[in-house]
Each structure stands twice: as C-alpha cells, then as structure tokens.
Image: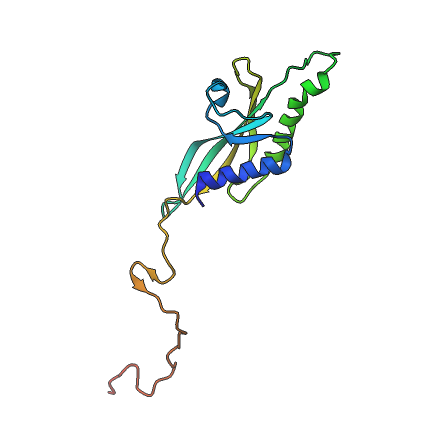
Length: 182
C-alpha cells in the first residue's frame, strides 16, 4: 500500500459513491481562503486532509499510525436559513449533507483503514465565502510504504528453488551411531 495515495483514493471514491450530490473532491490546501487565486471548483465540495497523531513501529519498517482524517465540507448558498424563510429547505441542505458524510464514514472500515469514528465536527472560518464545516474522524492505518520488498526467488541473498523437494529415506543401511561393544 502507498499509504496516503491509496487512503485518499479510497476516501474520495467512497464520497463519490455515497454522496452523489458532492460536485468536487480534492485534497485540502486551504482553497477556501484563496478563492480568487485557486482553480475554480463547483460546490458542494469536500476536501480531505490527513494528520498522524501517533505512529508505532511494527516490524520490517512497517508502522501502525493513529490517523486523523478531516473532511472539509464547503457549501455556497444565498438562501436564508431563518425559520419561516421562503428558501429555508434549500439553505439547510448542507446540514443534511453533514449527516450523510458522518454516516458514510463513522463505524466503517476500508481496505486501507481500520474502523473510523467521528471525534469532532465544527464550523470553520471561510472568510464569508460560504459555509465551511470540518468533520474529523480517527482511524488506524498500516503504513508499509517503507518496507523493503523482496522477490520470491531470493531472501537475504539465498537462492530458493522452485523444484520439488524430495525427502531423504528415513532408514539407512549404515549405522547412524557406532557404539563400541564391550
């Protein structure tokens, strides 16, 4: 596994599969703070960020990492959210999508991560550009990207044979031990 590449792709694919209304999935690079300078993207959008909280060595340069996965959900709306507003239903769609993001990941495992659990959800500052929420999950991943791979023919420079192994006979005509007679 290429830990971060495979993890990112699996999470992005899960978002695309479980939340078809999401228009854009990308790595988090604080795009919201630079809307005029960044590549324009459609909304609603989800950005993915990774942080390791702790890594433990297993063996052969493999590590188990307690990882925090942050999903930044960005939603632009000019509708009003106040009770009784004409367009309140469309204005609060982002709350439904926050629930859907939670449901898509909390308590799930994947090929590249162990069971995720939500540990935080909060509104983030967006500079007035729209609604930005961060949902944080924690999970364990096994990062074997530094492991030295060996081919199937050599191990520590010892040649291995593909030929069938033939056991030597269990009886022998010659004595195994020579015990002197007294």
